[in-house]
Length: 400
Image 1 (cartoon, rainbow, N blue to C red):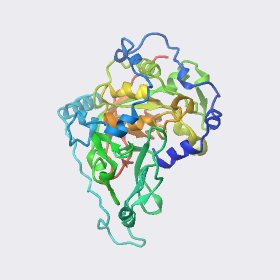
Image 2 (spheres, helix red, strand yellow):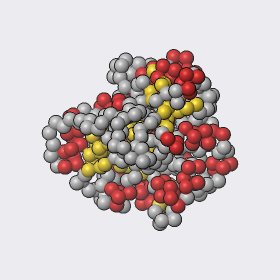
Image 3 (cartoon, rainbow, N blue to C red):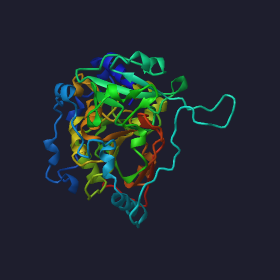
Image 4 (cartoon, rainbow, N blue to C red):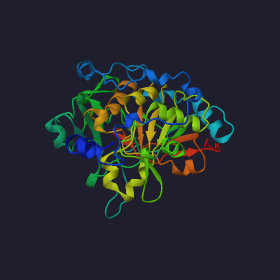
């Protein structure tokens, strides 16, 4: 999720602009699947009804922080701690038919500014500097190459944020990415009560950067929301992109019911377990080339209730194929700025995957398998943008 996009949505996208796209329906939260009352075992008992969109007490967070992580006062990995060797083995067995205890190892060279590179013209360089938004950075930070963005936190929920920048404004925060826990905060406070003032250096953060992720190998679960809507004939909830592919409508609010029914349609009769990575398929990626302006203006996505539903399961991260995971419809957000990012990162230590393209897997009726992610080994970076891989031999024809 790009901080410049957050600024755009706060200051430039009015309620009128936000609601003019797509089918022009009322608030997306009203949309419900019509596949019936049967839900997968993971959702038995309607447990989703206890999760709400009530805004977290941001005044309390601004005063006291998010609290100490259940993984310990020094933890930087959050729910990636749930990706244990045993769970990697489970995912390996699921994907490949057999498996023993599997460990994940970092084989990438750790990058730093000035890393030696074979001489060429123009030269090969790794020069990364940190962009800060939401506070006024100290002068020595700027003098040493740090980049000052906006100085006041965004929205009533006081969103602040960090991003890396390279020469010519290149950043990992573009296209497919896994956001780090150092990307977005609430005022001064980030995951595990790390403070913004204490974290920042001109070339990256001192904690919570890519170095805290390491390689990730765990079960990925694709949840085909737009496929559900097509199968159910809910034409008001999707449209056909220029390339002929179905796409959830602008600002469609993905509900817990949608998630439960999509899992049922996919014959997913197991539980979503700690360490798993759910990946929401909306089709939004099909606008990136054909209609980039519309692609960036809005997006379908979850909101706080759904984020909390996943967080209750201690998933390793929540991913999707849109640019920011959470819905930005003012009718849903009431003017708050990316609160799912704040709460998932700060309270739960759950990272967000964005731009995960799942079309080819779905075309083969593959909905789960071994998900392998190897973020760039760059200390202090705010996300990794290496493309994830899904390995699976498991095919499941969905219910019609």
